[in-house]
Amino acid sequence: MEDGQSVVVKRHGVAAEEDPARHRAPSPVHEKALAGDEGDADDKAPRRSKRVASLDVFRGLAVALMILVDGAGGEWPVIGHAPWNGCNLADFAMPFFLFIVGMAIPLSLKRIPDRGRAVRRVVIRTIKLLFWGIWLQGGYSHAPDELTYGVDMKHIRWCGILQRIALAYLVVAVIEIATKDARVQDQSSSGLSIFRLYLSQWIVACCILLIYLSLVYGIYVPDWEFRVRNVDSPNYGKVLTVTCGTRGNTSPPCNAVGYIDRVVLGINHLYQKPVWRRHWACTDVSPHEGPFKKDAPAWCASPFEPEGLLSSFSAVLSTVIGVHYGHVLVHMKSHMDRLKQWLAMGIALLVLGIILHFSHAIPLNKQLYSFSYICVTAGAAGIVFSILYFLVDVLNLRYIFEPLRWIGMNAMLVYVMAAAGIFEGFLNGWYYDGTNNTLVYWVRKHVFVGVWHSTRVGILLYVLVAQILLWALVAGLFHRAGIYWKL
Image 1: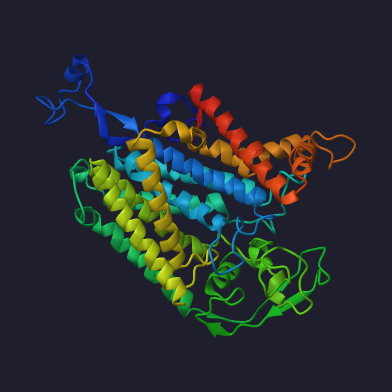
Image 2: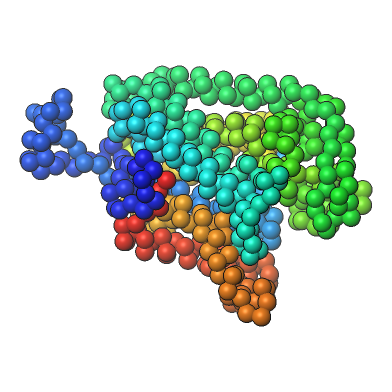
């Protein structure tokens, strides 16, 4: 949507993410009409750009990962989030999306010379993301499992996936607008010169990292208490105390990330079912979710915000790295030069993150959004994107990745309907003889689980076919009609 006017745009609404190196000369009529552009009047006619398909494919991959995690993560621990330290498949979904959000920023803002208009556009998009995030994950929507709506404002959840994306997008886009120089936007660059062109952005990124590390390892975390809200718990309604009294601790109960959220947001506004309930200290069936041990520590039943304030602050760095990849796309015109730059940085980040983790200096941790986690996931994102770029935009094998490209071109639609469960919630509202007897339940039980005689395999196939592939086809139909849900 341009300046927030409409959620449905026609085909020209997707032209922002274009490759500056791919152009065609326009007709002589267009040349005369645009002859006022300096430097192009004689030999270099104004050019028409081609959309970078690998951006859509990668975005579609990130959304597909989110759907897979939400639908099959409970049955497949390797797909779900790591209970604490470590990195499973699910832990790549959020940083992958933040990375591609950042990569698209230089492309989308490149053709908006007016800073005021650009800031207004960014702010409007941020507000829309916040609205959808609070509505979908704040507690108002109970889809797809419960046929009710509404939230007690005393317990509304203020943070979430879209809220984190909104924060990262706002911060990085404003930095891009404030620091970009129109004189260098179309200059070709190579190697370290791109870092020099945007040195101020990297200085801001270093400041964000230093502030994050100072708070994580410098804040004193006192003892704290909470009231158990899980009605199925034998401790329901009781007030339990968690003993900390420490500084620089990155364990589940005593880290500064959780402490800041409890103080600023309030413990009643945090996520009530954190993944640490699958921690080995909490259950004997870890990494699966199961009954708590008899001697499980009190914090196993406490809330924790995985998209909290301090962790979202450090998550901005994933988007900053994505912006650098976007700058490479803007300034470098050769496919090989781009790939060399992207792969070099991706491999360097991946190796650095692995070293930090296995040396026990800074463990990989999605819940804390640790620096090693940023490096590993951003490095992996850079490498995966480079591979997709080579296959899709260099070798032109895009037909293989069409389903992901369709998802990526209508990412918001697919996320809301599939990942957030709104469409399944709508279908579940039409039941027969009981709320457990719905079309979704019947298809999952008889078409997938029943055929394969395995709950784990059946649910995995259901998510892959009835959610990801189905919505890829729907998004493909929308693409053919030239309809896109944009923020």
